[in-house]
Amino acid sequence: MERLMTMKSVRLTVLAFGASLAVISTFAQQAPPKMKMTTDIPVAITTPDTVETRLGTLKFFDGFPDDATVTKVYDNLDFERGVQAFLTAMPGVPASLDI
Image (cartoon, rainbow, N blue to C red; front, top):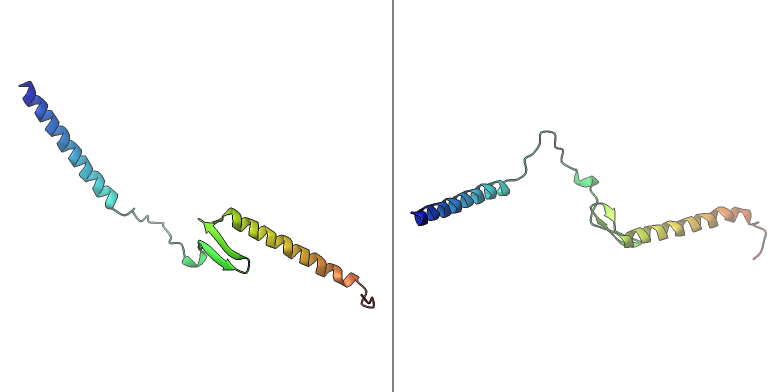
């Protein structure tokens, strides 16, 4: 009698486990619900993973630059500021000065 009760409880447990797996897999296969106020993001304003520039390839992850990209951009800014300082100082050199 006890063995029969044990077998019934095992079968019931397996049946319950199988039913729960079926329910979980049904929910897992469904796409997330589309909310009423959801707006699609236009492709024109998304950040690509890589951008080819004269500085080289700039890499991004979720819109954030990686360390190499940050270094390249700051080095370029330093160079541009140096050129700007040079060009700003040029009018101070007399044109009559023969170098």
